Length: 543
Image (cartoon, rainbow, N blue to C red):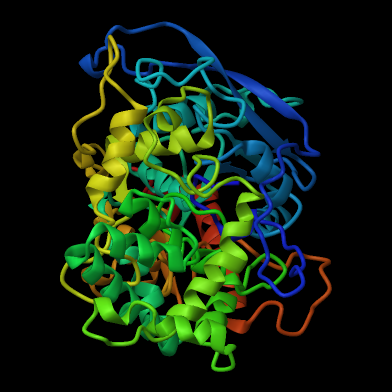
């Protein structure tokens, strides 16, 4: 039921609205129509680093997919980093449609989807104990990508397609977008270019800014309702007794969630969060309704419904005695949505079960079975952070009981100290931010973001960094950047392709212009590559 990883709009397939309710997410396809290949990848790229002692010469099978449908000799290799999920899921969507296909069509490229270590079918070990995870770090992932590009012999081709002798361009969005940016910073001598969309390039501990785009751009009667209700919930948490708190939870049908953080996170699920949630949220909104989800707006329409029946609106007064007899505007609508549309996603499992909404369960987190949830959590706990959290000094859409300590408890339970590895007390953000954080920059690294992206503030376009400008045409292609107006998370991934039938409203002009810009950038990079023995493109070492 739970989706314990970041969701990107491209990677989800549309389904029809169930009668009277929002869509439910369907998981990425676990299989791909494209053949899968394996590469014998080093488990430890840093034999002189004390961080990975005791060292090993072991290898593991790193899985990858290839699409040579449009390839012609001399075309670029475009490698999609799949980062936080199975490569099969990415290949099944990115090859047949979208921006990757557009690159391959336009430039006769050869496409690769490369699976991240500790995801999909590329686990080095049968379990993810703390010791087995000691080789799962950002620097090892980046080294995987460089080693693969320099040594892989692609099926049907010889070593002539290896980097850096052959032109390789990286491509990725969200966490993989950050990895593309880091790889260009660390291995710019291997990869000629990289497109990083909505890349998470900055590690932080708590991330209340995830909710800022919702506060700013969502319908204001919706956010005002949530701000008011959440403020009153926090008042009851702070001043109420056990019976009052239980009564408050029962209004939502969640009285059996005894841990306050579990209750607070559950009623926040329609908004989403940096780690896990069971349905489509603000992050899954997309310009293309064929891949996007409108569940968030359905949620807002419900909690602001002026025509609710009396048995629902009367709940606005049920908790007034706990808040100086002030009514809780739209509490009944909010609680009804949770009971009617969120709780049923548990498919009959009790809400106080870890298969549903119970998070405060040590044995659940300590399960060492290989899983996306466990791999992603390990990266959060050790390097990246971005824990769910509320602001402590301003209006909130989620309760203030959601602090970094709430998520840190999962880390402690999930990854107890092993013989050779232990996680830090809180994420070692310096290991993630060493690549540049919001100031990330590298030659021929294209950075794309969305104005309304929930992860904007942990990327290149963080609001507190101010505006960014290119000062010359040369700089505009050497350090290309594009903030998509009104854009969300990885909105450039979805694209019309050659041969697609134009549908009015399918690709708005501002999205189309982003894609045309990306094609111009790629074209200029190819010209620089081809001209590197003379003219501007020859200044590779300087650039």
